[in-house]
Amino acid sequence: MPIYEYACRSCAHRFELLIRGTSATPACPECKSGDLEKLLSLPAVKSDTTHALAMKAAKKRDARQATQRINTQAEYEANHDNE
Image (cartoon, rainbow, N blue to C red; front, side):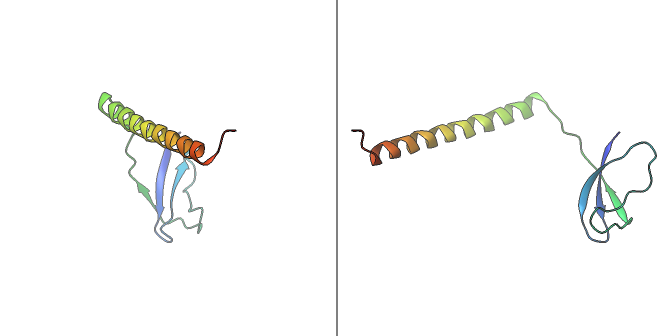
């Protein structure tokens, strides 16, 4: 059962729809128009390159969050006396 992407020509609403077998012509969930354009969906491609880029971005994000946590902790300790 494929999921298709559509754009309504009447109201320009874009949406995805699960099509089961030979079901009736779909309608726009916003304006109920049947004047739809089926959009071309590109599959998600995973490769060593995309995985490496995702890991690099995640490590960069994690490092930035760690720095933020350290700075927040240092600010908290500077503004609160431990008696």
